[in-house]
Image (cartoon, rainbow, N blue to C red; front, side):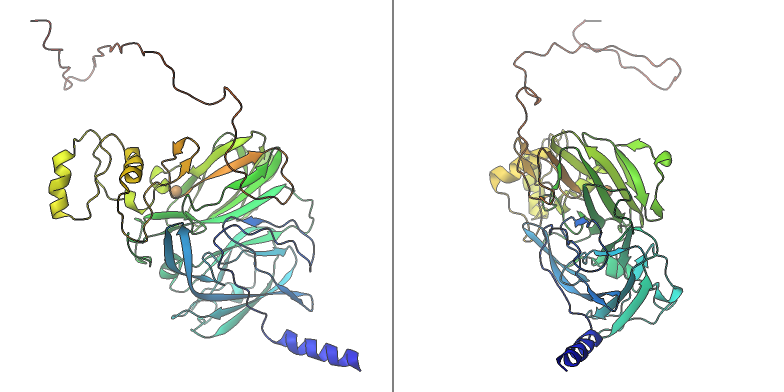
Length: 448
Ligand SMILES: [Cu+2]
């Protein structure tokens, strides 16, 4: 009798919607090793987490809630975004090839939404395009999506309703369908994150959502350096990093000290014979790329977008170039006209980092200085889409703790030399085929 009662209780419980699990952490959470369903090697979501599920009669059930969230972009700045289950981006969803997946989506936003499962093979009516394949999920309503995770690989999810505004507000998440065979293309460490961007005016909290290209915060999983956690790997680990681009421009992602191969796209895994070595790969708008490398060089290696204005935070935008301009009086004059005016770079931008530190320069509330990271040798002059790959000897399998600064072996760090540089000898080069170019003769000392 007791058995009957228990099974009927559990039937009732299973008929109810799955529990809503949320997280407010902006730091990287440990990988979620599966305790139910089929085995796989979990990913680590950079500055994010994986959504737990429940098994219901062999179906993997998830519950996503679209809702307003507060995201710390980096220490010193919080943004009022929209996301899923407490954060932007939403939690990563991990399933196994062939899994039957059921995802409940509850809308707690003030406007309608939907979720498109970018890159997946699924029935047309599960594709999440409002108006085209389903009615919108109105505020307060819950929809259910159900399909088989057919193709292994790296995917994303995002709204397909008022898409420009909702993505500019941070609504997106990663999806990994692990291969049925856990020994297919195995790696020691497997990271995932999304490239995203915001336009948040210095001193404010909410993104401008009609911005087309001129975003001022370039982020990985809604974090800007130095808010982006380091990618911590063991020496000689085979490392995979999966990146999806949901910004409105391309990002050439660049690693120092290693070469990688692009091993996967959102279209699938790339055969070995079709790969070539790279140190930079462009991740175009709406694309995912998985890169892999052997981390055989210990150190703290920069890993960043190679568009240099994407490694800057908000204060670095729309300021005039003033290299070589003596600013002295000018600053006072401009300051009378524009009270918030911040002088930029007489000798380059990096003096700003030092100056801001020295003078404790006031910047608007809730604003990140344009470049604020510091390392063991001083200012790093970076913000935005920048972090480090920290390669260390002897890390335990699931140890992702920041190991601190790399200790360079003696004699292996670039250093100042205490000797005079020789004078510069300039050669006069004359263009022979361009009559319009006049080469000015040296004047002055010779007396001609
Ligand atoms: Cu970029």
